[in-house]
Amino acid sequence: MQMAPQMGYDRAITVFSPDGRLFQVEYAREAVRRGTTAVGIKAVDGVAVLVDKRITSRLMEPESIEKIFQIDQHIGAATSGLVADARVLIDRARVESQINRLVYDESIGVEVLAKKICDFKQTYTQYGGVRPFGTSLLIVGADDARVRLFETDPSGALLEYKATGIGAGRSAVMEIFEEKYREDMNCDEAILLGLEALYKAAEGKFEASTTEIGVIKLHEKLFCKLEEDDVASRVAEMKAKIGGEGAGEA
Figure 1 (cartoon, rainbow, N blue to C red):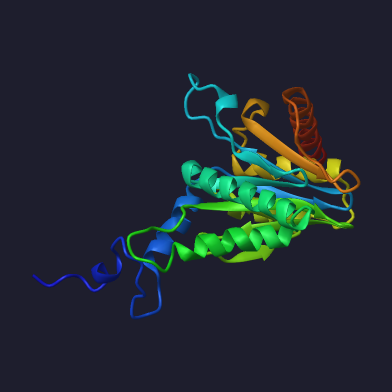
Figure 2: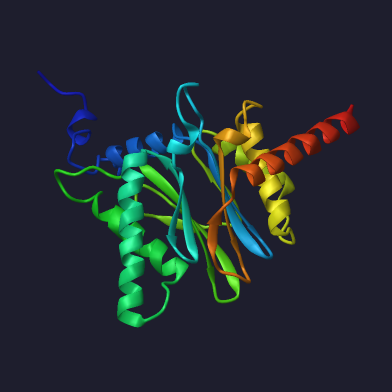
């Protein structure tokens, strides 16, 4: 029996198809596209990552779902896709950060760490018996006098953004950012815009209890996750703002 042309390039081993495609990497990207929506956004005084955790059952404890992680004092990350894969990458990133401190007696650069993680991801696209990581990371941090925001791809590629999104709601998020993002925004304004983007991506099915926010202020260079009360107040502010805009348009 003759196999369909694609099937020989569609097995556990990652092999180029005749038209130059890696199907396993494309499937890994599809796993990310089906994941929860996460956004990152830079401001003049910091950078923030926000995630809609998308609770599928009222019986689940929202705090048991972790989508935003601290890697080092000055670096954090948000994930979309396969959470188990993401945890492996986060652990790897933490080890790389510790190694840098031990060897060089200084904190690792955000771009250096992002490239190390992407190098690690890339190796899983070129050897037999392994599969690509089915997750993307938004890596944020503070370097010297600026903040950084990198998006990593299952292929091992990375890009730096002023504002971006990953996951199921990426298209809606990018539409909002293209329209409303400003480079002179402060951190509070950036968080509100990120919440608005998540709200639009979720088509209004959005609650503070399922939202995580991580922030790095440039002058402190310390990554922290906002407390539930703080998140709830910011979500309420965002909804009031959107309601006011809707009334103004009417």
